[in-house]
Image (cartoon, rainbow, N blue to C red; front, top):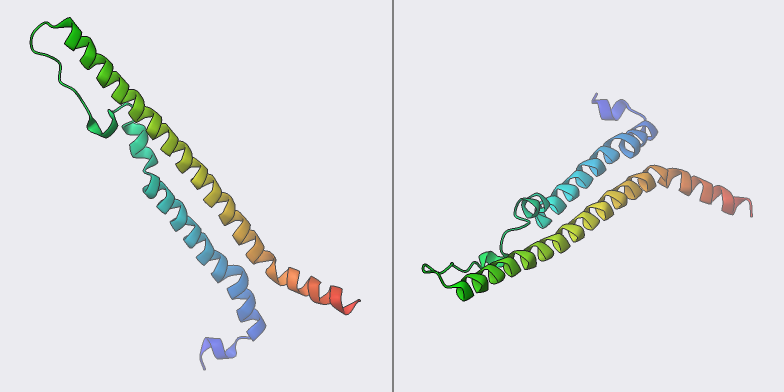
Length: 129
């Protein structure tokens, strides 16, 4: 006789409800968190925080031309400032998404563990009416 045929169906359900499914939900939750990190590339955005926007970089003049030198300096500085602002916005959005995924995972796992108690209390509530 197989092990599953010898076990009580209630014990099998309890094992599934409180062991196998929460383990699966933790795995799914971890995958969502890793996807969020990969999708927003938060670590890469921090590494390249002050890089020029879309690699727009002007070359400095070869001769001594003060007007062109400051024009290039201001353009490159503006490109780096624009790049850092855009990256900071993406970092903030990514962190907020990670916080949302984290909180949603906690809520889903907590609700999954409470489902049997909610159903039983609902049945008892309607039986006492």
